[in-house]
Each structure stands twice: as structure tokens, then as C-alpha cells.
Length: 343
Ligand SMILES: NC(=O)c1ccc[n+]([C@@H]2O[C@H](COP(=O)([O-])OP(=O)(O)OC[C@H]3O[C@@H](n4cnc5c(N)ncnc54)[C@H](OP(=O)(O)O)[C@@H]3O)[C@@H](O)[C@H]2O)c1
Figure (tube, protein in one colour):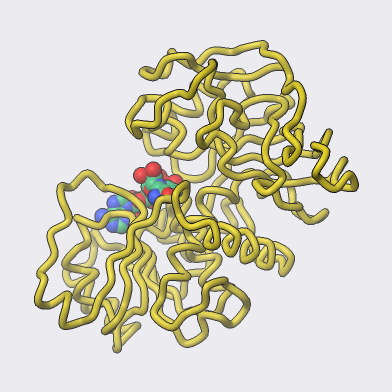
């Protein structure tokens, strides 16, 4: 089968077009998925560079990409045979596994797949995994809040999404909005402001233009926000403290490289504030299952979309241009990067 992979970590040039054997015998719990779209995330170029300290496991090459969508071709002996032919999205395909979705076929535990409704395109399926599971986790850490998102489960809650034009930011806006929250988001430019509005944010603040972002956010959320979905924890530490409700949570899913997070202990303690870190790979299994169920429910409700009109432009690359896709994402391309595996 055609694939893209690397045997050593480093520069983009370590990525090579490959012809490798199609997955052989399946483990009892596995399915083989013929991949139509492979979704690229920042974690993929970071892993390729060796920045995440996730060594390539025994055997080579490492085929990258966790997210993807396609159809089930074969199933292991313990998997329901009626799944053959089903359209599915997959998640965490390359986590501690060599076989990511930048390939024509992937063998993966059936538990890491979920059905894709007939009216949902493969593009959307390949965009779900990492961003939407991360966002679901962030939104289900609220004090007294739901462990799993459903319509109305965040009614009455105020959520601040930092960076609402990012992939995770967009997913957080879409899910929070579906769950009934009031959604406030920050962006750095008028173009990103348009995207965040298209995603469904109620209030968008250009943090580069605001002289007092906390005061601006407090106008929309006078009692503060229940949760911050945070991409830039060190840069936003003062802002988050200033807008958080008592017992609020700052859900941190990225390291903005701005240095260690330094918190005023007394003020944080007085507010009973919580700082919860998230890594999608290592979050509790219950939280992963809840995220998949929540995403499935939102999909079934017709509430998850990608594309410019929904605040997240989509950029397609053929399998032969995964290198370019990684480079463009690393340079800050706005939107979701998808690989057309069949072209
Ligand atoms: N922990 C996990 O499990 C997990 C999961 C997914 C992603 N991540 C990580 O999270 C980061 C974002 O991923 P992504 O796919 O969403 O990337 P992305 O699409 O490139 O989005 C990143 C966003 O961060 C925003 N941003 C940067 N500095 C900001 C600031 N000071 N205040 C508010 N927003 C700020 C940028 O928007 P502006 O230009 O508007 O500021 C940009 O839209 C990456 O580092 C990725 O590796 C981690």
C-alpha cells in the first residue's frame, strides 16, 4: 500500500513516500480501515521533529497522523462482522503505534473508531479526533458540570475559549455552543474574528486591540466565566485569573513557550480556582469514551461542521505532499489540514 513515513525524527525531509505491506493479520479487537482522509495536527509535526519525546517504537517506519476517516475493510475475530463496509472516523491511530493514517490502510482497535453518519463527509470525520476530543475534555472539567456533553448540559455556563480561530478553539466553540453555553473567545485579527463568529461564538474579542481584555470580557460575563479553554497559559495567566468565577477551571491544553506558569497562590486559593492540564493521549479512558459519545451526539444532531463557513478553513493535500502539509501547518496555516489519501 502507499504510505508516508519516517525512520528517524528530525527535519521535514525525513518524511518519505513509501510502499509498505498492507496490514497483515488483524488482532482480535482490531479493524482494518481503508483511509480516505487523513487529518494533520500540530502534534504530528512535533512528533516527527522529536519534540514530544515519543520515540519511534520497535519496528519502522513510523507512519504519522492520528486522525482519519474511511471505511472498514476487515474485522478481527472479536469484532462485530456487520462493521465491514461501515464509514468510520478514527482517533489516536499513531499513538504508541507505527501505523498512522497517512496510509491507504490502517489496522486499529475497533474501540478507536466510531461510526460516521451517512450525511457527514469524510473531511469532517478526519477533523474530529484530536481537536474535538481535547475540546470535549476541557468543557467537561467544570465544577458541577457534565462529564459528557449533551444539548443543554452547559446551559447557564460562561466559557472563555482562548484562540477561537484555532483548530481546538473552533472545536470548543462548536461543542460549547451545542451544549448551550454562552461562548466568549479571543482572537488576534479581524480575519480570525470572522472565523470565530462563524464557528458560533457569542462574543469575540480581538485581544491585540483591547486595552483591558478582562474588563471587556466582564461586560459579557459580569460574574466571570466557569471555564477557560486555554491554548496560551503563560501569556494569559493574568487575564484568566481576572475573569474566572470562583471555583472556575482553566483547562490548559498547550504550552505556549512563554515560560513556566507562575500563579499567585493566595488569590488562586481564595478563588478555589483549578488549573487542569490536558493531554489527549493520556487523559482517562472514561473521558475519552465520554468525548467520543459527546462528539457522536453532536454529529448526529448536525452540529459539527468544518469549512470556512463554520470558522475553520480546510486545506487539502495529496498523499504525495504530506511534507508540504506539515511545513504549512508548522508555519501557522489557519484551519484544518487534510490529506486526500486516495489521490
Ligand atoms: N494537549 C493536547 O492534547 C493537545 C491537543 C490538541 C492540540 N494541542 C496543542 O495545542 C496547540 C494548538 O493546537 P491547534 O491545532 O488548535 O493549533 P492552531 O489551529 O494553530 O491554533 C492555535 C491558536 O492559538 C492561538 N493563540 C496563540 N497565542 C494566543 C494567545 N496569547 N491568546 C489567545 N490565543 C492564542 C492562535 O490564535 P491567535 O493568532 O488569534 O492568537 C491560534 O489560532 C498546539 O500547540 C498543539 O500542539 C494539544
